[in-house]
Image (cartoon, rainbow, N blue to C red; front, side, top):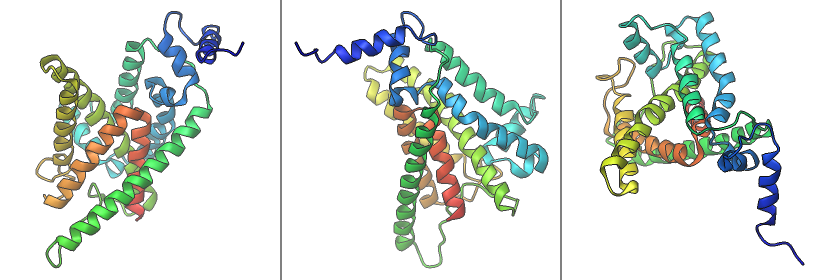
Length: 273
């Protein structure tokens, strides 16, 4: 007799039960161990995936000088934390690790990660980054075509003082990490949870949180909010709002590691393009 359709799933779960990393009584953890698309969304996987980039960013800041390589959001929060005597260079990496470990513990997840997952995550992030870059490029072409003569649409996120190409690349690596941490994890997730608690429709709550976070994201790039931002321009503001909403969708469906990787690829392509 041919096996039923659930036989393969049952075998996978049975095999996962014997793995030391899968916690007993946690079927979600067992499923995540064998499924790449679920595994890539795990907080601990995101932390492992991003840790080399975080370390490279912080080491580069030590050798080149903290402020010369600080991204807009990084320097913004760094200056805010200095008011309370907590403006050390490592505060944001520690915050990133703490937040990911918190969600790792909250989901009762296991610690095991398949090494092949990282390569797949990198390929996925690169693909999404190129797609987003082409979308933004088309958006800007259309905006320039409809703009008044002589108007220039600046694609860059921040005013960067350094002229060294490697320093600018490192800066945009930090921007991708810290912007996604602040806007997606620290602001948007609690906003979604709060709105779901007061609204009857979860989809409406999520959409409101995404839109609100997108507006904050766009405002954070304007010079009257952030000293490293740029003068207000309706086209640039609209682009950043739209990009933020796309990042939010990617975060919700593919996880923190993928959206940060996508953000970094997009930033670097924007810099080099």
